[in-house]
Each structure stands twice: as structure tokens, then as C-alpha cells.
Amino acid sequence: MRALHSRHRVRGRRQRGAAIISALLVVALSAILVSGMLWRQQVQVRRIENQRLLAQAQWVARGATDWTRLILRSEADTSAGVTYLGGVWGVPIAKTRLSDFLGQIGDAGAQQGASTYLSGSIEDAQARFNLRDLVSTATPGALQLDVQQIQSFQRLLQILGLNGQLAKAVALQMRAGLAHSATRFQTQTAPGSTTGQSSTQQLQNLAAGGATGGTNFSNNPGLEDSNDNSAVAPLLMTSVDSLLDVPGFSHDIVERLRPFVTVLPTMTPVNMNTAPAEVIAAVVPGMNLSSAQAFVARRQTVFFHNVGDVQLALRGAGVEQTAVDPNQFDVNTSYFLVHGRVQHQRAELDRTTLIWRDPLTHTTRIVWIRDQL
View (cartoon, rainbow, N blue to C red):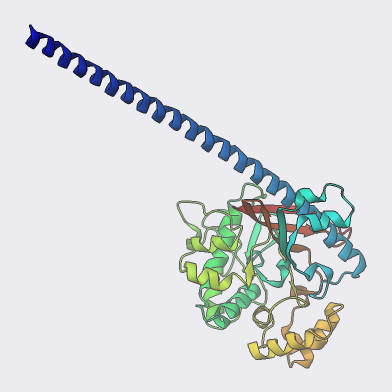
């Protein structure tokens, strides 16, 4: 009888131990589920906060862009049609609290911007060589390779220690992209037609130093050249990174070219008040890099007020006037690159904006905006 009682007592202890273990497992499982739910809720809340901070940073960047457009317009109103490096637009903004800007206009809520910082600069886009100039549109739909501009691009590549023959490939890529653009009126010549020397042959003569038929443009603006018979229509070149689609270009070459070339929506002259020595030596036939550097050094003391001043300065540098095309130069700018950075709490936004300024009315328009988070 005593043995039976002992067995019942041991069995009861085992059952109570199993019940305790089961209860602990249920509690642990419940804690894991609750903690997972809380973690997912915290992640969701954090994501919403990040989206809110990013949206606020974008609005701050938008306000800074509008402020930049005001600066460009007011600068044009007072500079008599001259854009030079000493203008107000050329002064960069160091990292500054947004509250400092708001405090200057007496905003009572300026303290709300204490955790937001702004910095940026404005760059003259026409200080670079515009790859869009490689192709001219004399009449709607007629695309012509500008041999003189291709020569300039060849010289720029050679100055930078790169292969000058890449200029031809870029020109053909630019023309092919424009030819298949859905936003441009296209007039295509009949397949197989010939109108004199083809652009391919003319560029070969150009590389060999031969004559170009007495014109700056190729005699064959059509699309029947063997270089353009690709099965896939190339994308329109919209930035320097588009050079990676051109055979012969690598990331290193593109980064080497980036400070000196650009792709703008329209053909533009080079601003001789802001262009670096490498670009000036490339666009001015007969000028070497050392002469261009001396030209830039003299320009720092006094800027050019008109194209006539530029021609006189080039004559003083020993450049023959017959080799200079005044249509390639200017002292005013219509395209500007605005580089801005906004730090709003833990959100950071780098924004690059291309702004066009009307040379007559001085009104500004945003061409494109590219954000980097």
C-alpha cells in the first residue's frame, strides 16, 4: 500500500513538471511572437519616419533651387549679358544651418531648421565642351556631323592623353541617338542614295588631315552609313555617362573626361570667361595647352565683355584670326549646373539640377533634376 502511494506521488510530480515546462514553452513562444510584432512595427515606424525626413529634405532642396534661380535671374539683370567667374552665382555656399537663412528674414520658427544643413555651388555648364555640338541640324530632320567640332573634340581627347579617334565614334553615336528620337521631326533620305562624299569617308579624311569639301558639315546627313546600320536603335545621349555606350570608352576614360565635357539639350558656344584651359586649347585651332593656361591667367585680372575682346586676346596669344570661328565662343551663359546637398537630421540628399536661363528675358527653367540619396 505504501509502495502504491509512493508511485502516485512520483507520477504527480512528473505531471506537474511537465505542466511547468509546457507553460514556460508557451510563455517563451508568446514572447517571441510579441517581440517579432513589435520589431516589425518599429521597423515600419522607422521607415515612415525616413520617408517623412526624405520628403522634407526634398522640399528644402526645392526651395534652395528656387532661390538659386532667383540668384541667376538677378545676376543676369545686373551683369549686362556677361557671365564670368567673379559673379555672385560663382560663390559657393559652405555647410550652413537652415535656421541661419531663416533667421536673416526674421522667421519666428527659425529654430525648426536647426537640424537642417545646406551646401552647394553653381557651375557654368557652357564652360565645358558640349557633345551635342558634334551634330548640327541645319534644317528640321537633317542631321549633319560638324567636322570642325569633331576636330575640337579630337584635340581635347589628345590633350587629356586619350585616343583622338574616339571623337568620330561619339559623333556617330550622338547622331544615331538623335535620329531615333521620338521628340524630333525626322526627315530620312532614301536608302542607297548618295549625295557626294559620305560622312564616314569625310571623317577618314579628317583623321588623315585631308580637306573637308570647304564646309564644316558632312555632305551626307542621311542614315544609310554603315556605321548607323545597327539592329538596335541607340539611346539618346543625355549625360556624360552615356559615353559608356560608345565602343572604346571605359569608366576611367569617362571620369577623365567628366570635368571637361557635358551633354546639353541644344547646341551651345563655349563661354570663354569660364572655360578651363583644356577646353580653350581644344576649341581654338592652333592654341596649345600652355598658351591656353596663360590666356586663363590673364583672364583672372579682367573678364571679357564681348566676343571682340576674346578675339583681341586670342590675337595677342598668337592665334591667327582666320582659324577662329566667333560663333563657337561667347561671354554669356544660358545653362547652369546647380549642385546642392541637404542634410535633414539623418536624411541626406545630393541634388544636381540643370537650369536654363533665357538670354533675353532672363527667366529660368529647370531642364532636369537628378537626386542621389
